[in-house]
Image (cartoon, rainbow, N blue to C red; front, side, top):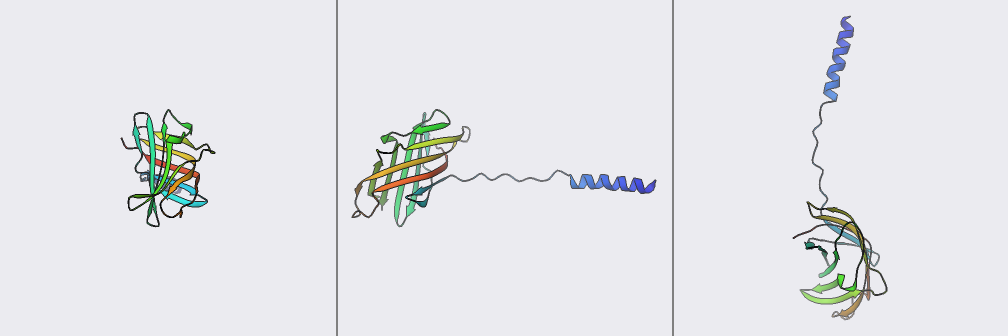
Amino acid sequence: MKPIRIVCATMIVLFFVTCKKKECCDIPVAPDFMLAQKNGVKWEADPSGSNLLGDTITISAKSNTGGEEETMNFKIVFDGLGYYSLRANENYYGISKAGAPSAVYKPDPTHVNNVTIIAYNQSGRILQGFFDLRFVKISDNANNLHPDKIIMSEGKFKATLNQ
């Protein structure tokens, strides 16, 4: 009878030892990002200039490459998750060097630039989504060193909106 009690007591102790509440860590929050294939090459930018003003959300990102600063932004009148077609005045791409414009682009009129919002955390003002944007060059102050077209495909972003 004693061996059965010893076995039962050992099993109970093992159960409580192995099944004790495990300490859990906080799940890290992914930092804000903007990624795309720019003319077929990986492109990354920081969307820290993004904001919410009334019902309009502007996602603005900057990237530094080869001593030049690339700025891209788009804005939408936000009414929830979904697909947004952008009009010509709702997206922009430009390149500057030492604060002066090097190349300026406008939305490609032959392409429907669009943004799809897949998640919105209202309390944290965090927005996530995808984008597909194309631009054509309208001016270049650097002896035409910049491409005539900018194609931002497979774009994705996560941005915390400032107010």
